[in-house]
Amino acid sequence: MKETVPVIAVDGPSGVGKGTLCRSLAEALGFHLLDSGSLYRLTALAAARAGLRDDDAGGLAQVAATLDVRFDSGEDDLVVLLAGEDVTAAIRTESAGMAASKVAIVPEVRAALLQRQRDFRRAPGLVADGRDMGTVVFPDAPLKIFLVASPAERARRRHKQLSEKGVDANLAALETEIAERDARDAGRASAPLKPAPDAVILDTDDLGIDAVRDRALALVAGRLHVPGQQDRS
Ligand code: DC
Image (cartoon, rainbow, N blue to C red; front, side, top):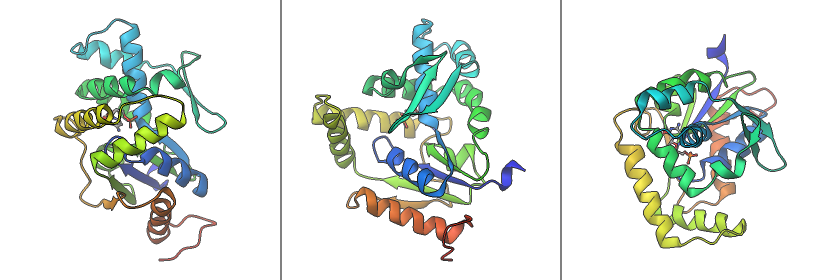
């Protein structure tokens, strides 16, 4: 039974560090990983390549339903293949994130991606990274974490991440983009970004990556029985 496979739902706004946390949780627990944002990013990329407009709900949903995607584990990141082509870098740009946030408004797109996301739920468990993991995709997840951090702190982290990759970015522009994406993701009618009523809110403004990971692992130990992990509950 799929429903007995534990899911750790990790939601929160752009740039809050969900990706980093989810990768390290999945690695520590030996769980599968769902980067749901990449499905929205891929949908936006494939739709742009097909010349679809933002308001073509039927066309966008068709693209989402028929995405030919494969995730391979690369050296330090997931390699994403769209119809066999490596699009890892293409979907990671700021503009790809913005385009994803636009197609994510369309309820038909969300519906088309729902089952594809649920199919990632496989033993021994899943760490699911997104905006609506705890509210819509895995409402029965035994652990839901909602990460928050101020837009200024998220822009600062994103800026650092980009400079480490050698990408020159403007801090003020990043903060504006983050605020714009927040408004769209939280303001949309269909599956808006918000914590599930039973989510644990983790404010990461003053926490480093390791501290966030330790808090999350303590929550896992209290809520989930993971073979091989110390059960501290
Ligand atoms: O997590 P991310 O930055 O890769 O997500 C890109 C966009 O996709 C985000 O701004 C909103 C959308 N998204 C969504 O609506 N629901 C999800 N579960 C994941 C992402």
